[in-house]
Amino acid sequence: MQIEMNREAVIQGEGILNLIPQRPPIVMVDSFFGFEENRSYSGLTVTTDNLFCEAGRLQEPGIIEHIAQSAAARIGVIYTRQGEKVPLGFIGSVDKLKIYNLPEAGMKLFTEITIVRGIRYYANFGTSENGRRADC
Image 1 (cartoon, rainbow, N blue to C red):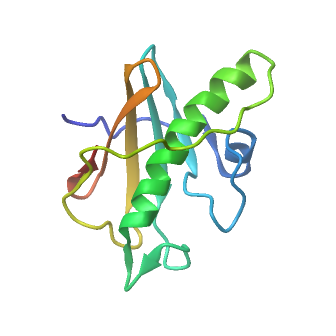
Image 2: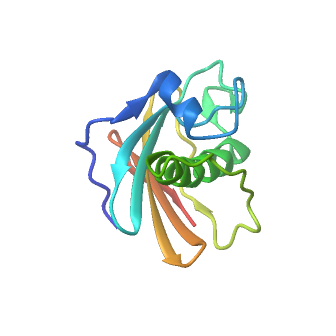
């Protein structure tokens, strides 16, 4: 699956905190690019001071947390638009996670969340520098 990399963020920085329950230092989404019927798009710039960055690379737990918060941001946008309180959520399981390589500090991740069935999600993310990094 090829990810489109030329979207403009519609929500970023402090605005993300209205969509997700996490607070610094565990915020793993810094931009939201929008959503369609069954897809949403979010991003993260990997920094060396990130809690999950080690030896200049975002580690596996950080990737999983980024995917989870990307799904949460989608729900946050939907609830916010309906004028409702953003609910807390959790990951029930992670199936078929494939990490092709760990993103380096300075890279901008662009993540696509696709609803597969009801509350099941498929996540795919990559970078503009080197394409696909992981999917599950």
